[in-house]
Image 1 (cartoon, rainbow, N blue to C red):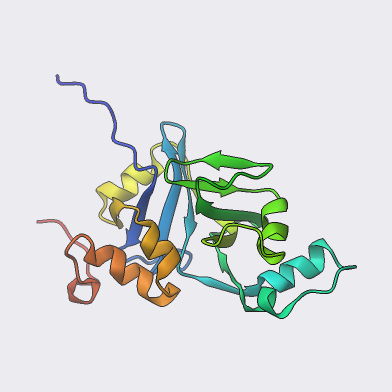
Image 2 (image 1 turned 90 degrees about the vertical axis):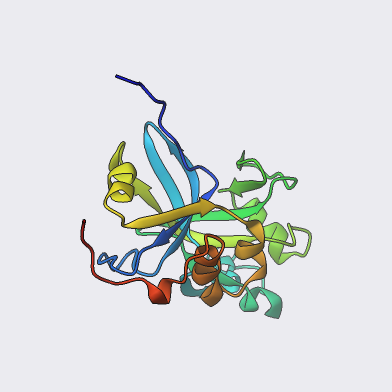
Length: 189
């Protein structure tokens, strides 16, 4: 028997297949922050939360008036787990109190990055999410085997440069796939 080491997908996008029935993940594009033998964690990058950075800052520092630019910055629903917890993806060269290096990107979970963005000295490229998506050990691998997801290496330009409504199709196109042409029916030959 040939033993192979598992292939992990950290710093990849997960692209929901058209037949994805779970409303938490239907038409989702997820950036995988972590994927190892202990499970996986990612952020949905194409689902706005309906809140702006200004709305969040009103809760974090109510004594300080917000500015108009913070009201224009969209935050996203990163997933159904711990929806009160914030995550900021940004280029790895920016470091804050709780920044985890992901290679080309960093993820920060401390409030100082939000204040820095709002005050104009934070990372110019950033993605702000509330909540995350999580998988138990082996769960994501099973979903991939069931063809629930496509995966491709994450491309920061899709995350930072494209409007959220274009991100899913752009990630699929990087694989040469047009999601509109895929069947929403699942089966095995």
